[in-house]
Length: 210
Image 1: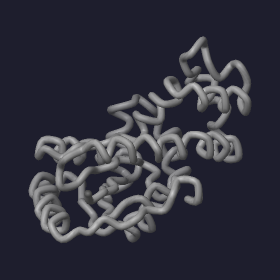
Image 2 (image 1 turned 90 degrees about the horizontal axis):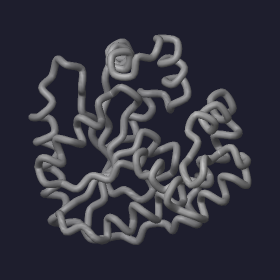
Image 3 (image 1 turned 180 degrees about the horizontal axis):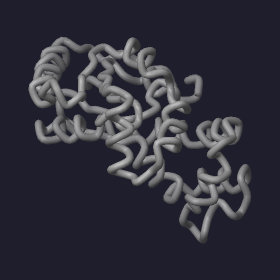
Image 4 (image 1 turned 180 degrees about the vertical axis):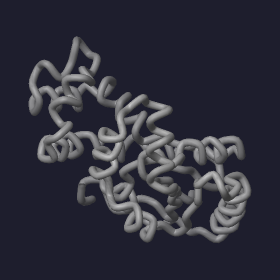
């Protein structure tokens, strides 16, 4: 089965693109949502997070998001430690999920597809991009965050131009070009690719760099 990555910077609208693919019958795995779920449901992961960040990381079996966010907000070393714990668990979960699907291809939606190393498990990668000022306006409206906060989050992500240069195809979500026709064109391309695709052996989660 063809495995497709879908990525884009915060506010780019990649989730909107993912919903269009879902409407076409393509299963989509949201890595960000799944990571939050697994931090609650995976007992071993929960134990590891508590070992690194302390008992305040959880309230019972529920992740203490406000505490953990404050711990990693301005500390890249702590963020890297958390990612090193979470990413391998997500890799295993999406692999298991993908193996159960029967569609010509599946999509993994992830904001940090390249940063996490998940791109190594993909056969094709779609990038979604939008002008930075438009992304800021969207996030102000969606999350009620200040421009300063938004620019900080953007600065923590991979450079947009570099990220898009690593993708196999880029969808422009700039509110000038129609979105659905772009998605339909990529969908058609992926269906054709899936017909001739011979499954390759992906690198193991253990050897993947994080």
